Image 1 (cartoon, rainbow, N blue to C red):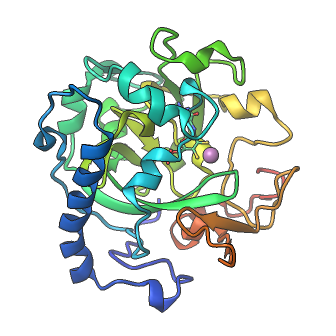
Image 2 (tube, protein in one colour; image 1 turned 45 degrees about the vertical axis):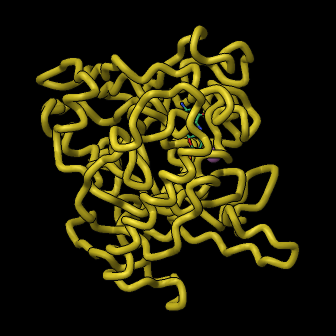
Image 3 (cartoon, rainbow, N blue to C red; image 1 turned 90 degrees about the horizontal axis):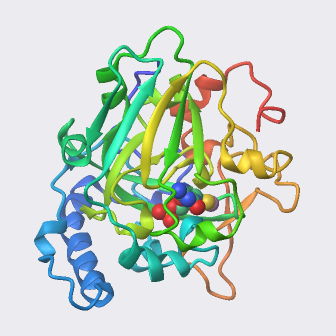
Length: 322
Ligand SMILES: Nc1nc2c(c(=O)[nH]1)N[C@H]1C(S)=C(S)[C@@H](COP(=O)(O)O)O[C@H]1N2
Ligand SMILES: [Mo]
């Protein structure tokens, strides 16, 4: 497992003009929270009695954060893929806040582990110190965002259940309740949405068990109450609203691979040199940069995290294992 840490450094390929000194970011967190609160005031459903403070998630600064400018809260929460609530970008923000019940919530952790058990969400939140981690997110649809997540490494949870020697892969299953999720009526994918990682990918310190963004609990449409974030892979690997984490010996089939195996592989590492069969993956549109003459950004190998994760794939043909 790579142990080199690059606290607060941007991946090397980021232009110096995009780099913000650490002190500026530290102050920025407060601004981010203020901006989020303002966004929430507008977006909050009428009659929601929850005080704004109940949404705050105190966290320490985490390593690996990019210094790129975070994408505005409004865009992150209003331009969303969460097919359980519909396939249009504005379906999840329309339906998830009202329909998804995030309490009570339990995550079953089982399979090839010595200590299988269910975790209540409140316990899961307190299992390890929460960190602010600003990561890039690259959707397979060739748009990207910079998201200030709040969470802790998934490895913290994995250590506690003690995987056995048979645990080679991890499978994530997300909630599939037709009463809460109108999108389940359409068979776009074989519900429930499942995703998988190799055990070493799941244990990598970049892989985040995520509870919040912009210093506050996750809006439902972004995968409340708990989701995975794997920043060097296409966004669909980051399963939302998970209810089960299972350790298995054989590589699990993920939902997108099941529905279109020639388009989506198991690994789905961000790779500008391997095009999607229907479009190029060489460049991306950053959310919020939509001017008529705004240049698309070049997509970076492993979404800019090559220094941290390339060694996981040493010797593998990444054209074949896409
Ligand atoms: N359960 C579930 N998780 C999901 C999806 C989904 O449809 N259902 N969409 C994925 C895709 S395609 C992307 S790009 C990211 C988007 O995360 P965000 O909207 O919170 O940025 O969530 C991923 N996780
Ligand atoms: Mo995506």
